Length: 483
Image 1 (cartoon, rainbow, N blue to C red):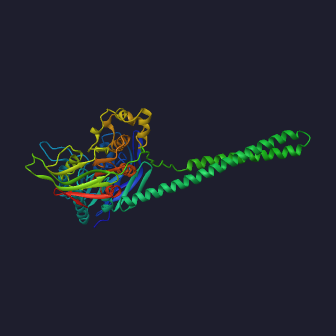
Image 2 (image 1 turned 180 degrees about the vertical axis):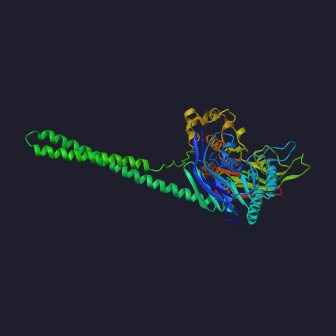
Image 3 (image 1 turned 90 degrees about the vertical axis):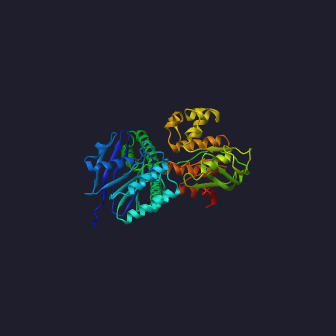
């Protein structure tokens, strides 16, 4: 078997009109190897996929649908065949499948291919936990057949389980390591800490040189005065003072050059994200309780969606709910909120607790055309609105952009802040991590951990669930079970 890589990226530099995506990126994908490509939205992952797909046709940059500056090479080994799963699947005429079903169907079809190299761009979008695990199993089977795969995903657990190597694209550098996201993140954090330490040492050296320079200049100034004071009466003193002043000035120039060199060498250290959320206290009390609750949709041929569900939650509890698509999770939320009445059983709700429901997608959660307009009902003035949004990294023009132009991560953070400005004590959060990149999910995790009340969150993101849940339940076959 040939040891030649299926794909070789060498010193690839890509720029778009307003910025550089990456500089001198190099890595390879071999047979039997899964390489994960991770990074924030907009870091150039999908662009790289397009370059790889176009590389067999000659100059890859000519096949991309926007202006790029490209140098370096993207090389496929001779006779290597590609199979690619795009991030957005085109809808087929007359198809009544859900997005999750379409995604499963597309994955099944691509896995039937006899291709050598597979490109997966966010393959687990819209998949439930069973679909994600099935995809992991299929990937293991592919690798045993000595195929290769380049995998773009925001699912940290998936990457940790599958990746032989990870390429982590960030605005401040590229980090490559054996293993999954955990290894790449650790490497990036170590690099950040090293840069912080180096920058601190350089700042201290610059401060010391500047202080010494000021002392020399003061000393030289005093010598100039003593030279003038000596006049013609003591020429030897005046001559010595002039020499000493000249030496001080020369030392000053050397110090200035060294300061310039140090400033040029000082590494760029991005500011750490510091969230500033509204602060208030939440009294601990019961929010709701479900006692043997069942629900059946009349239009679903009598199919029972919820069967004898028992669940209670308080303002201090942090609960996550998992389950297959269509298992009844959103129905359960609607029963809790009172939007649906149970077919059987009893629901007790504490009307004095401020409960906020955040649906999937969140675009309809906001009533105003912009965040500034929408937040006017919960904040006193524009300055307050901007301060609160800035606390979750939504700054500048983002406050006056149309809601539809904001990213899913920005909407999730803005929705959480709005709830907190309303004094929310308990959140019902339906799939907040859908379509969020890893960085946005990690920010949301931190924000939820700082939320003073309780919540019930639905998510298929296993890493997210591990970090924000104190209790985990699974809805399966209409019944609620402790995970």
